Image (cartoon, rainbow, N blue to C red; front, side, top):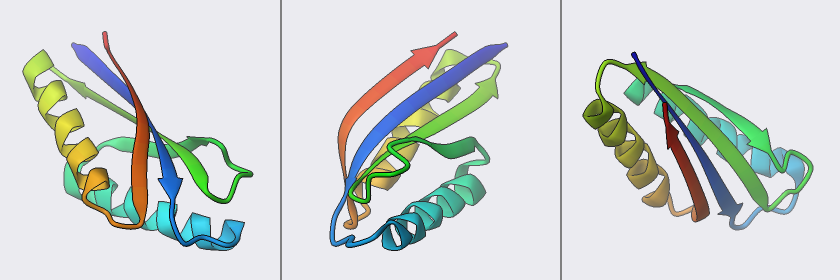
Length: 93
């Protein structure tokens, strides 16, 4: 069994309140969850309205599959015009 975890730090553009930030982050989280069948949540910077840290985790039987899913998740978030990724931390156990 292989476990993958990824922490993605983002800047959210055009947000003027926590309500707008939560709308953007919840939208991204729901789309990623349904598309990739991963565990995902906002895990940091909860009180800052232009920053967010999203945590992603998954279990598989191969490192290649974990790498592939993490890369797909990062590309998905990177292609969303509402946010910009500024830092990524990945661990595979």
